[in-house]
Image (cartoon, rainbow, N blue to C red):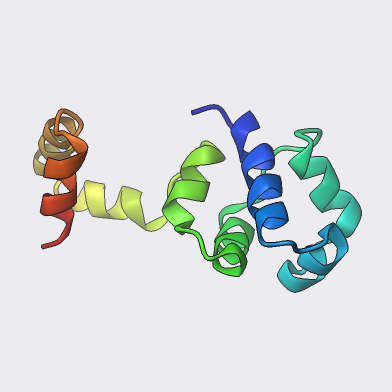
Length: 108
């Protein structure tokens, strides 16, 4: 997914919840001007910590918003590096699963 989807997604989620731009910016600790520019894709998505705060404020999964921003959670590289061969194989295999199979797998 392209990072350009991040801003539009944040704006749509915020508007669905009927939260004003100014109120939401205050809630997540950023300026309304900055938030507006992110939502219009004039600025790139913020860093991981702020994206996680935005996700929490919107009741969304932080990993999904990180992915929309073209990022991954900072804990994942360390997990992969602990067992690189197994994790690479696991991720490649998981990439071929159906959504239903993947949902069953992640319940464990």
